[in-house]
Image (tube, rainbow, N blue to C red; front, side):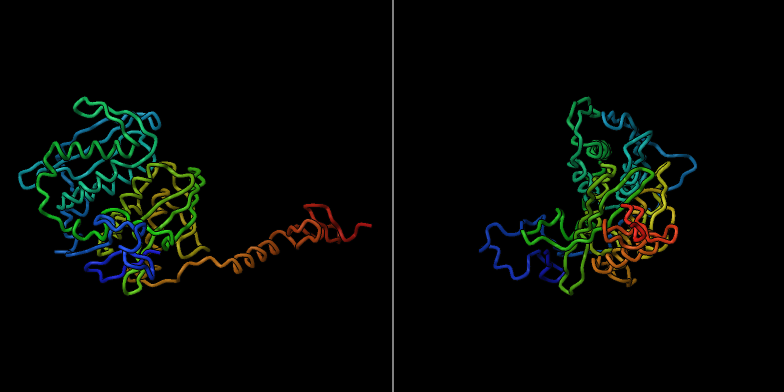
Length: 369
């Protein structure tokens, strides 16, 4: 498992009882970018956000629209809006136009908040990470006419934003580093063969036929606190959500956790046309409510996990599957709703029919001669 062995002002990742790194040539990858380290946090990262919500101007905003022609999702637009800030044209939000890939709108919403941070190095780091997102690759013509291969639709999306930011000189001044400085690790920490802690939960959106598992990898801080640092999915889900997971993983590695919480909360109202569905409320499996999208449900589950770990100031129970309790629950449910246990076919299908205990599954009856 991953354990942070020093104080938060500069801690590394190791497995319990590890010998010195020099004695284990194949141990945890401990290069500078993969260490969970914080040398100095000059100010709260949230203070770098120039506008927590999108600006409103009745005169409208200037924007630049690019087109992505994807063989998988078809043609859709990427709109990057700008405004004047301190006499300089500054990008502050991005939109997906038309029938874009499912899940890309959520990533656009998350990136828009990053675009309104004064730490331009953070935005640059985030975009360059997304530009490497794997998927179904295709060729795309860049704004200067160059033909380039994109590893995925998410990568193409991030490439166009990065291009526009370069064109506007957004990355010319990287002096404000308050968010980047607060990163525990630029790259995702790699485990040894002992693995690491993780929290997993099943998600099903029958309306969109999403059926996947959400994984939240976690590390242990010196005080014993568990801290999530990476989000992944597996199963049937919109593959553009791989980009959102990559983005949120970086957000979760920013200390303090308030940055990640803010980024997750903004996804709670993500709407997908025709994608609303009924799901159990995290922490209250006996209650259900409508969620506007799979992304909104993922966000609610992530916040629930942070509450479970007491990272939001609210303490709730720890979620652990008990196979004994689960078996008893299912047997009770089967007995109450499906019938008694059949000694022949071993299913809970024995019902009283015409006064006789009869298995409606195999036909076994105590009244049979």
